[in-house]
Image (cartoon, rainbow, N blue to C red):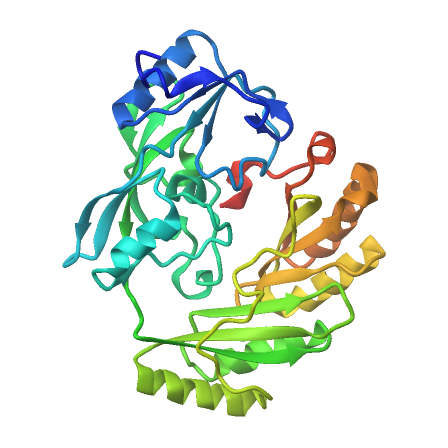
Length: 365
């Protein structure tokens, strides 16, 4: 209470839980020094600490053995320094990504990330390397970081140096990030996909044109309706229009380029009651992975993600139960292993995540 203030240190409520494991206390420090003092106190008392930002991915990964203290970072918010000329910024970990993008856009710049979680904070996004469609051109969220300031588990404040978010065991306080110009124009070109077999040819044709796409995404619904492949092009208006027309002609697209993304763009195919999978495989083998997943699951499975990078997400119904889900994962991993790919369960309802072989944080980097 002395560290965070009387209104920002309290006993946990029923909603303060991680993967079904209730916390005992919640601390909401307002400064990096307060985080460091809180972590030092927790270490001295042997408390298990779990950081929480927006909470959108709090249940991702392997459930913690226990949660004594939830350390809420949302008071660590704001852009501490934005160097427009150098195109860098120091952004506090509790800053919502959407709020940071809005502030940076006022100076014509952006952080080249688009995490699908609407409530994602900068620290939460980096801690789990959550990355959306822009991954195709700009890389992962972690790739945008020059260095991090963080507090270790035993309460020491440090700067990451050459290490990235994957090597940090503690609480991220802020990130020094690289920025990109806000594009003057954006166009999406979408074409229908009737079968996973179409993916490889469409992606190959798109890349052959050398149009510098910012993203190439695939949506394969579980229901009988056809899926779609959508390509995002960014840049100056005349050349974006030209590239979009060339792509439309090459793919024989039935729809005109649109200034708005498809409704499914930048969204996960899973919900809170699903077992969420992340599949990584060379693009040439993505169709085989989708067919294998649907075959071993014995049910239509929605798949969505970065077709151009071979990183997609899928949703298994929790009704399968953890044992059958584990068998599905084992079978799919066998198929992917021969193709240089991998599959991991990143989120699941508590009754399943407690039994399932879940991904660790490091698995996501």
